[in-house]
Length: 292
Image (cartoon, rainbow, N blue to C red; front, side):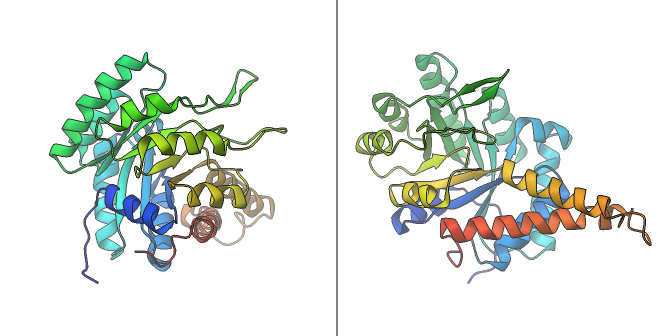
């Protein structure tokens, strides 16, 4: 394999994934440990990977330019040769433009909360800007559910006709609401709606689709979605949960007091290992191991 230390667009990896009936994980990064853990796990498992950055996480890490520089340097210093895309997650119009300028290789513009015509207009403009520079672009139709102020939104089902209109703008992959939810799924969640997924597929053809809110969806349901054309699965909450749990156990066991256990490199190590294990587990479920 040709050794490359460059970020790549997510388009080719997702087109291959859809054709091969496997999925690629888009794992959110929040800091250096998160990024290193995900990159190392991808390399160890010979899996393509997408590093996703929310606008909040980007701000936390002092800006998209910092994130881009860190990821590119880390790919080189860790000798990462598997395909890696650096992707903006749920980006605003301004955020998408900022990531294009910061050297990301992929962006998501989430105009799902806007009037549909505005979503179309802004998506069209960003498609042109991204493609000039060889970046891939994701758009969204139908909001993804979640809990807000104690109210559980089941997730809006995307309108297949609207999906076609957005797909026809030349986007590279589409996020569409099929009953999925961000965060931890509530009791009584009815599951993904495969009928809606099938109707969307009929409208958009071979365009890869994205499953947001990957945490808590049963593995068999994720695998069914992948077999039906989902090529990108977003994972964030699950990594946060295992990181917090491993860190809590380390501290509650008093390991931070023994020797130099309070050294952040030691303190954060169990959580980092937990992320690596979770990412490897997800790559196995998605079927991306050995596909780099």
